[in-house]
Image 1 (cartoon, rainbow, N blue to C red):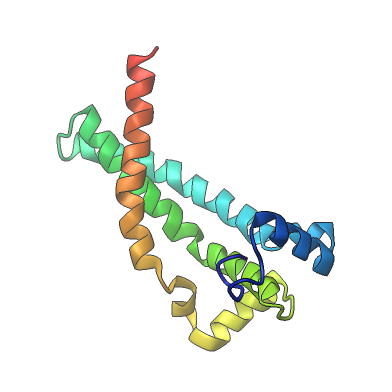
Image 2: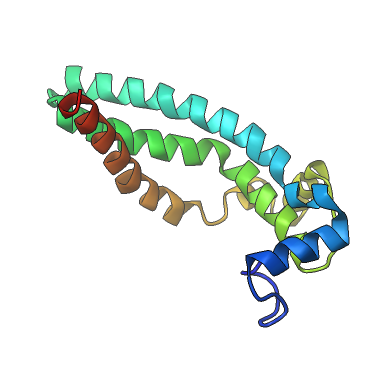
Length: 154
């Protein structure tokens, strides 16, 4: 909420919490949680499926070694995660921003309909390019670090 409110109206995380509770009650702190829970479930299912398939293809079809296949698999897993749950992440962000800006508190379904009415299907993927470009190196690093720690520390 600090990112979308007028400068100076909220001074930090504590003021955001107080403002949200005053406006919406305690459960207002969970605005946008439903699409995040659904999207995360979908995203992480896709994440590990993509990792498994990409590492297998990198090893079997392209002859990558373990480290190379983990890098490719991790990068592809990150991209699959974001691509699969990006629309619901967008809906969650809009739900949070509308509350922060003092607008009407719409339901998840109402936001989904509003995005579609304004931009069609493309509206659900606005801004995904930079997100996917960032996802590959970040997740390749995460998976490689995990694999190297698992291998060398056990």
